[in-house]
Length: 180
Image (tube, rainbow, N blue to C red; front, top):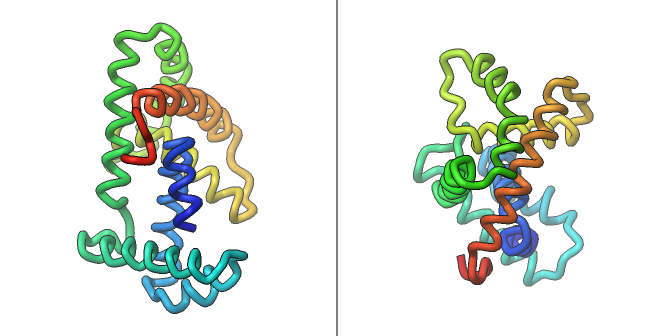
């Protein structure tokens, strides 16, 4: 699992974020019981003992960090949120300077407004956070065998296009993604 995260971090930062969200939720689903995670999750992985041990230690570290900062029920690890915020900074810069990205952004606006209005009093976060949360919600729906509403599928398509562009800019700007 750690190997997968490391590979995603080097190849596609948005997939990396979504994967870490999934790992956070996996830890929550097992109520931070790492013996259960080891037995029911890692026990079914087709990896060697070294990779299994490395993944368990990685997940234990995530669980410890989640407890320390009080995100046992919801929220994201600070290092994950920092990456999302970096993408948001790129997003705001590209809106001002890149006509191609601006065209992608314009296609997301009606969906963003709809999601913001649905959030009511809850703070939905910045636009990139909404993009990612929508894709993550769609991923969870698929994993749980539920069909998403057509509006969500349309939003996810537009958000995915914007995130793909942001990912390309982010990855190009990193001299060596494996060092970050």
